[in-house]
Length: 171
Image (tube, rainbow, N blue to C red; front, top):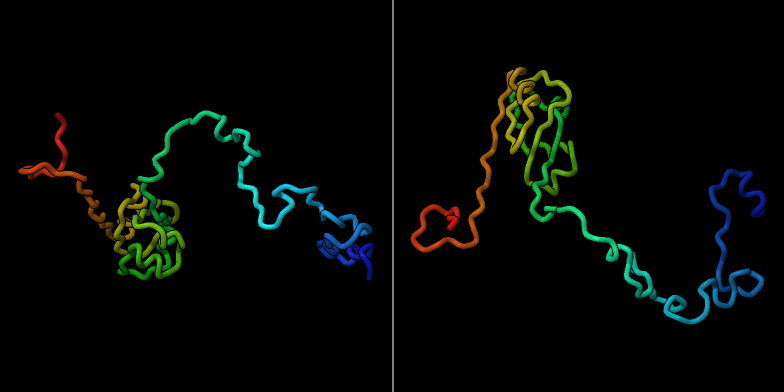
């Protein structure tokens, strides 16, 4: 077998081109790296967006918009149809979802929300941080119940002396 027959056999790729193996190979001597400079040396890597010292495109363009990524609330979301695997009378919370392997996102979030797509026939107790109106209606129509978990109130960074209410007062 040779390279010309590789396509006929249905092989995805032919043999790779070996570099630095003499002039006749087509990639001898400098092995496709050009002459001198950091790019010709081993260990050199080009950072994404690097333009050789020229002001990169992402810095030439103006900032636009706003984001709140550091403080956003990330929910593990499932649909009502995903509750079909639970037996009647069982309690569904984030731990139960993780145990069943319904979604892998449950590993990375602390908040749990149920959306209303699909149907449910068995009565289950659901403990969630948030739920859509349609999902709540479907669960309660099947004889189940919904428990909204209490929201965690974050303490302000500084509380004035003698102040009983922890919410800061505006002057």
